[in-house]
Length: 244
Ligand code: NAD
Image (cartoon, rainbow, N blue to C red; front, side, top):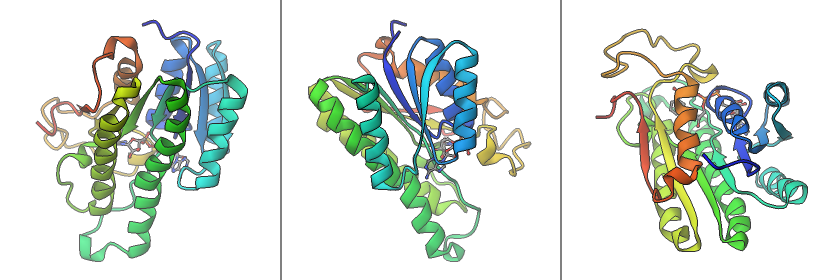
């Protein structure tokens, strides 16, 4: 994959899927700008990138905060002159509860991070990519963004929203040479799911197991590569057949 020296921003880079993707894109030769609101976690990912001879920076930002998003976008532009790749990935899941028991505060928080956060990242990164007339974006949705996920209504609504943003942005920006797709992981073993019992093989779908973060990162790496040059507006499930 000919992606050496491209500049990639990864949000939620401090853990799980974001960390795995940061390491994978860096291994391909990309310069990685790591974004997370957890500085310790983000700095640790940067250390791991540098340990494998990669180049990058860490920028602390809360993706739901517009000022923070504008700050990381302009910092990367100033430091590296361009943004080739954007992995719009940070997210939170909240706790399980029937819809009528879901607090308004929890609902607002899920939408603020997962949906408005994804929107803000798209909004400010697309401004830069529009000027370049090039770029490629992958948003992290979820299997919960394409089918019902009982007791995670707020999370599921936010991820259906990410799917809507992905398709609409792809339709608006494809003509400018910018590709925008989404990955929809099923169950992945990360910090987000560390307290969940994911041991029931049937619940994990046809492959009867959860995914590693690297298995999601591999698909992200493909989607941002030139090998995927005709993929735009695709909602790519990476869930072992769960939603099939
Ligand atoms: P994780 O908790 O391991 O990592 C998420 C990272 O995002 C953390 O480092 C966290 O600090 C950061 N983050 C959270 N909120 C933030 C904010 N407001 N601003 C900046 N950074 C923030 O989780 P993960 O499993 O790697 O999740 C990554 C993405 O994958 C999320 O969008 C999640 O919804 C999605 N996803 C996960 C699974 C799964 O089973 N783990 C399944 C489907 C989709």
